[in-house]
Image (tube, rainbow, N blue to C red):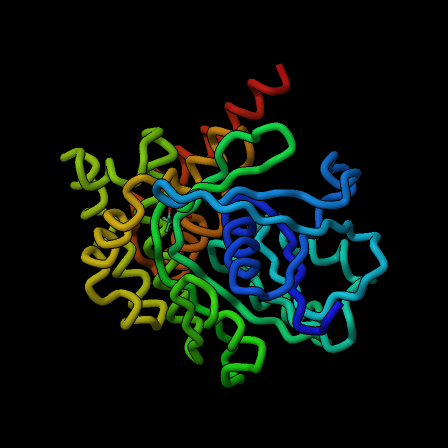
Length: 312
Ligand code: KPL
């Protein structure tokens, strides 16, 4: 296996999308699945990538955290709350010079991970690609690309590394930035304006532009979010926030946000790393965010009621 090969941890919608895009561009990649995943027994997995009326099939070799092959380049697309445990599970496989790219929503974990494993190069990523996993057909998995976006990578003290050239070959808009904090804040701001509302109203992203009461809620949320983002030291991420949010809503109109996908699947959501991080920052800066706080509480309540329902 060549040292440019990517291992992808977390083959949910975004992990599967990027696996297919890397494969399509001829960049080798394989999937690292949980030891309990029944697909592991087959050794390889087909993923169907659908975009509009076009469907392409991609075949991936599978491994588990216990496989022998060393990992030089690891893309981690698990949920924010699973990142640390997932990385810890593959530690014995990581080569001494391994690069770990984190592509999850939210803020609050990046620095912790870089500090926890200083011997690896940890790079943050952020994407506004819209994708969701469609139903499994037999032994295949299917991912629907529901809106094109931009994918940023960056680590404050590094210029674009050699491996980034592979990402420029894939059929997606990938950008290297030396100001990743601004990008992460911008993405956090966009997610805070879109994800909780779609999860609570069980609607596609596009409904936030189409339904008057939801469009108004987005506008009001953006005012609070922009105030906190600016006060947190990222005025560039706060500029024209409402316009950017509406652009993302339109570009991903047919997508179910990741939070809606989590709620529908009965999984925990990333609310603590999104609205939770925003509200905690606002409290530290003595800024009132009643609208975001109320969404935070509502999503937490929804999560709790789902857990209670499951255990009953
Ligand atoms: O990041 C997203 C998410 O769903 O988490 C957006 C860009 C809102 C696309 O749905």
